[in-house]
Image (cartoon, rainbow over all chains, first blue to last red; front, top):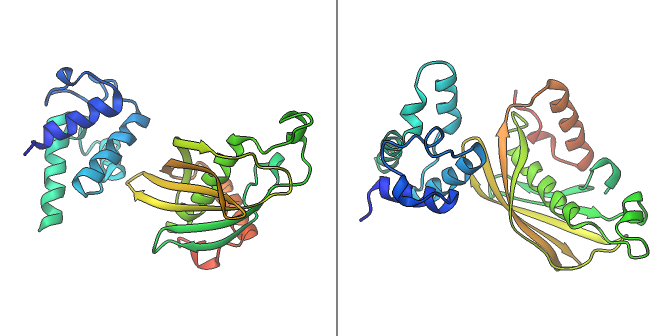
Length: 93
Length: 157
């Protein structure tokens, strides 16, 4: 079974036309991979569908804007995948 | 439809946020300056306005879904197909179905029918964001009443 990171990296590669081998757990979706806000919506849609979740993007954005969280927490892929895993676990609980 | 004012929906005939479905009547006007250019001697509804009709129809469902607490902006059109010419005077029925209600975005599938025959379809992605001004929200509420969106969906208070 593919890891969350592998699944997300494959989605980003396909959705944003980014070479798969350039995407690592340390990649920042915006700063490193150059994903813009529209492409990120596509990625979010793909993630929501694949994992059966609703990523709280508005909440995350508000937390970053209010200084309660860093962008790394949500936009570095290992952080994003940890958030996805937590949402999947919460849904299953 | 009032093409010059970008008012594509005449009447919302069904709006059910619970099942994520909206339908609307949209009658193409008999005459419009748009037809003078599109095309001289062969007036047809521009395909981009068919897509806009679907976008506005789906938009009413999304706005109602959150009782006009946020505005929706068309962000992406995917798999658009314009299957037939639409002449002035045609009675259209637009239908949009919620595909996914995300956080800060939504995806809908729309189709446009003329006499039961599909003339256009597309998947539409919207950004959902705060109204940029209270005046715009007031205008959207007024427009919602004009097209017959029920009062129960108009207030987020």
